[in-house]
Image (cartoon, rainbow, N blue to C red; front, side):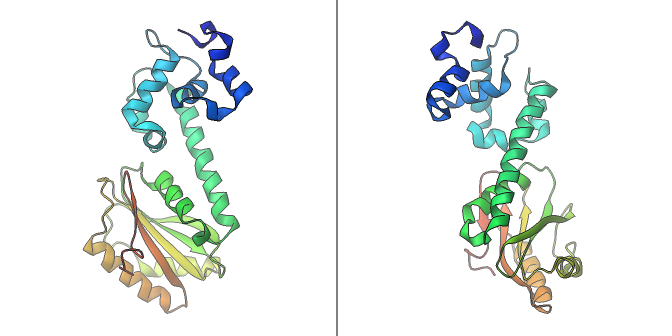
Length: 224
């Protein structure tokens, strides 16, 4: 049934305006974003199907462009809307991280890294450059491809940190396989970068490994 055929008090938009967004089920919230269904599949059912296929909002927001493109009936406009919501979430978390010391918001760091790195189909090594109060100056993707301790160049990280006036860094990279467990190569890479950055009084506060469902802190594992 199209949304405009529902009784007024059952329509997601009217329900949201009358009772607030918390009154809506997940499928109703997504249906508001999608607005229309496809032939033979009303928008509420399409929304529920998307949530079921991707494992809820978390999985949907971490889906890559290729994953969304394979969903029957999810055309460019709807994919663009979902991508826009994802980018809004990223920018909101980034703004939060820039306004206070990153370790005042450890969960925001994890969520931001998941949103940024988990959907990627290739390995990316990123650095969060921090000031002396451990507030975010910038997050930059430094290297990509098949990452090893020999393909991540400490001098490039040191140079960029000096350019930005950073006092500390947080390292992060993703595992496209989906498994966030740090490898021995990750440990060696971290040790090499820590040693190089220590020469210019820049501390490595943590190294996060991002998988499809989890973000592992190497500091919490005692690997720094």
